[in-house]
Length: 223
Image 1 (cartoon, one colour):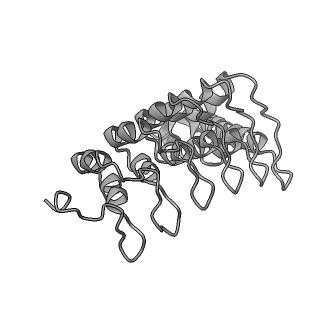
Image 2 (cartoon, one colour; image 1 turned 180 degrees about the horizontal axis):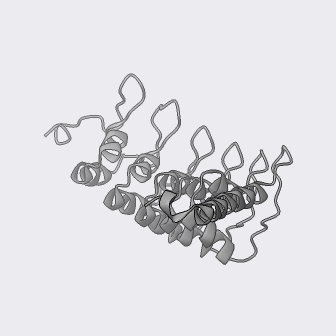
């Protein structure tokens, strides 16, 4: 009813949220459709949000697939819009593990799948860090994605997966090929070597415990 009476669809809250931003944030698809039908709407506007998030960024962050699809179909929506950390909608989808949203964005013409944020992290790096295997698979299938990309601290997707013990992702990255396991971060650390050493220590400890158990007289063995 408010729209029919000429309500300002670009109005903002005190902290810069527009009706479209709020609808995209909260997954209200029918409201988004109503707003997008208006001729004077800028669907790519970030309002005046302090973080410069767009409606697409908010929908991607929260995994609202239908809304992401609606927004990507608009000519006034930039699929690679960046917030104040230079993070794209794809980055936010990758960070949260929203694989369907990531797939929708990757299928959009002109999207840069390997863009870096202000710290040098890529969508693959953040997905690997958080163990989001399906997103990692999608990104590794993209020719434009560099699996050895380093951030400003020298970390690669593999080093972040190792540091956070994301075993399935580590396997995916190593199976991809073209992965450099001998990387060093900006402090000279070799994370994969450290992980291998920890694994060997656990194996040795287990074997030592087993040998000790074998040496016990039967009467004193644990049951």
